[in-house]
Image 1 (cartoon, rainbow, N blue to C red):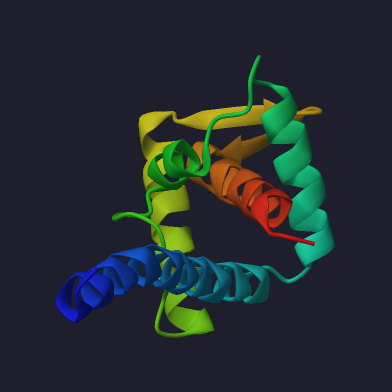
Image 2 (cartoon, rainbow, N blue to C red):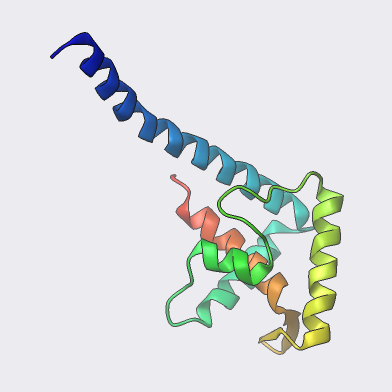
Length: 130
């Protein structure tokens, strides 16, 4: 094998793991900002778990992002600040209630986007390596 072929093979072989690490870091940053936006991450986890139990098969994180109204793919919607993220949630919540996009969990009416955001927290934490 010549030197050029060896370097090309190494470059291709190493590109995939680095891409995965970059994606994992983006998800980690989003997860950290998601945890900070809730007054109590534990309460959000409980709501998210109850919300996900309402599905025959829990939806993937990408679908939960869509239901929560978060644009883009993995790691692309990391809010600039906790206050900005909270304002977005308040706006989505009001829009959900205005159009009737609600979920009832144990007698409590929640905006669908808010419940999906709690479900997303649970799904992303479950997908993280231990």
